[in-house]
Image (cartoon, rainbow, N blue to C red):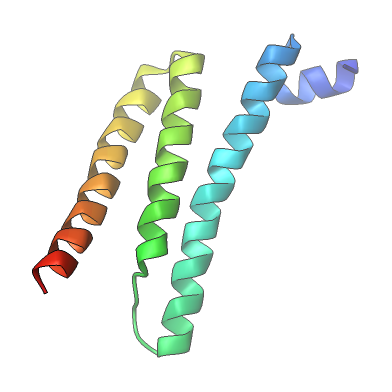
Length: 101
């Protein structure tokens, strides 16, 4: 690994590099969910929250929580833990309503 990349990403090993790449992928999940929501709302000409938004939220949340645990960041861990619970609960409510209907 080149020195400039190590300095840029604040890593000192290949393991740390892979975790940073994983963190970027997790952040892309969150970006994708906002793009999905924006496109769906524009198409409907109304504010729309598609089910896929919650899947991207859950995937991104679990990935970022994993990254936060690896980095041992208690603030980040707490924040992502709550988010993961909320995203999972929203999916649970959506599917419970569908089963009832």
